[in-house]
Amino acid sequence: MRRIVKVLFPLLLCLSSAFADKMDIKNFVLKDNPFATNEVAIVAVDTTGISQEKINGDFLFTINSFQETLKFENGTAFYHHKLNKSSFIFVKHENEQGSHSTLFYVYKSDSKLTPIHVSWVVLVAIPVILILLGYMFKRFIIIAAVIFCVFIYFNHSSGLGIPTFFETVIDGLKHMF
Image (cartoon, rainbow, N blue to C red; front, side, top):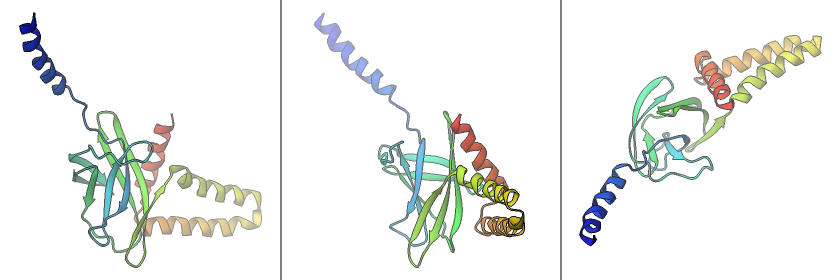
């Protein structure tokens, strides 16, 4: 009986390690790359915002409609493209559980990049509020139209196109339900 246990125990131990958890990235954030100027890093985090240091390997991301294979080491991957000015960055990752995407506005100051998460609710709320104010105050229609045009121009000049706008809103609605 002891022989059987001595033989089967190592086999069971090997089998249990063969079915280890698969590494999946479900949430991520953008941070300033501390090792290079004008570059950002993508950090895999859990739902509470804590870095997942067990994430290692190559993962396929779509960043501003370009596919990139990012090499994660200890939960962090570096996006080696210089940012010349403040702009929007749309980051999307697909795995077996579905797609995970986030829109960031990266504000560039003198020597530092500050990524700001942009919610799809804000993207929808600004035009809706402008339209409602235009209907409520008839004299405000021209001002609301000018502000709306400035909003569209700012988004377009900062790298947020109409397809990315709608993809962010639709992805946000999918994750809401």
